[in-house]
Length: 118
Image 1 (tube, rainbow, N blue to C red):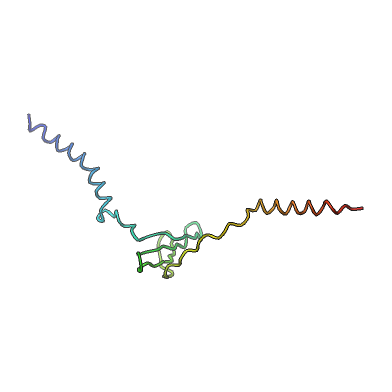
Image 2: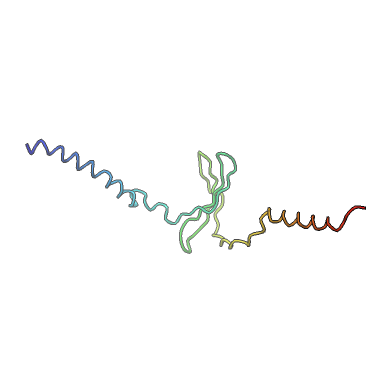
């Protein structure tokens, strides 16, 4: 009887081991788990439905570089390589268009009150 259970136990062991092995592969360099370290997307500009220009930052510390890439469905080409640009702090927000329009409308109303046509 023990011999008839042995293949079933091995089968259950293998089925249980598959998720564990996949989880481990995700987190090791062999499985590509650390492939994104030192890589950051800076910007993307779509040129058409299938073409775009992408700027990515590669490396860390003093070895950082920005690559400007031309991306199409069939290829990726380096267009330019440059040192990283320090991203400026956000500029103070301008008045929203609705507030500017409200101010303009208010001025027009006030100007119109004092000038009645004879």
